[in-house]
Length: 232
Image (cartoon, rainbow, N blue to C red; front, side):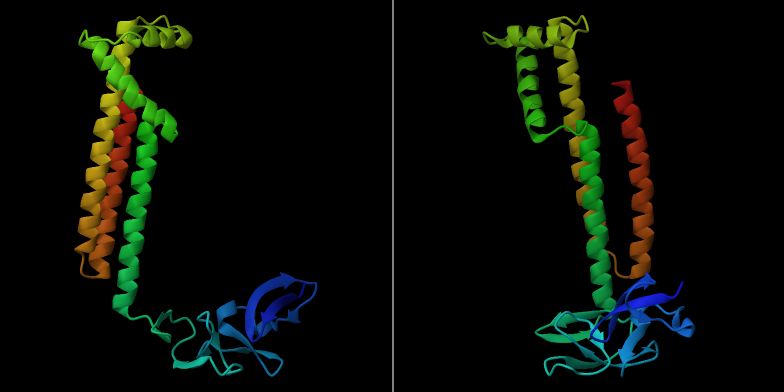
């Protein structure tokens, strides 16, 4: 079935099999959409083109159909950045800054996922309730229970249906609180250290090597954490 392309102005924005659209010549089928433009009603290969007119969205056109479009000399796949209403090609340093930001974002995402693992994906209300349970359990253990403390813990033990005594459930709640606190402290510290190490890198090679090390450390941490959680 013939391949058709969807065109907006001179840009190729999609491909479909059959249906409506502009037929894509077989000799251009190997090119990406980025390497194609519509010129004088025909699809042409612009992979070698270096003269472009950039619109307000940073898209490259082969002709200036709007006086506000800025001329730029670059390759078809060069990344552009707008600074002070002026488009320019991203430098290696610009790209490195973006790479660092992406690396930091991945660390933050890992930290969030690990906190969820530690907390068992509990919502904010359940996590907030754990602190109250920890405080109540500590008062009971220290023989300083308030009027309803033992009643509340006994009620939870009854509802759990595991034959636990108040003292047993108190120890379980304190252990969970301790594990949560230690795990959260670990991941907070690791996240901060990883960000500092990323910001200190000086080039792409160094950053790539560091991210590999951080990935290995993260995988080992998760393996150890899952083993510890399984034991508790």
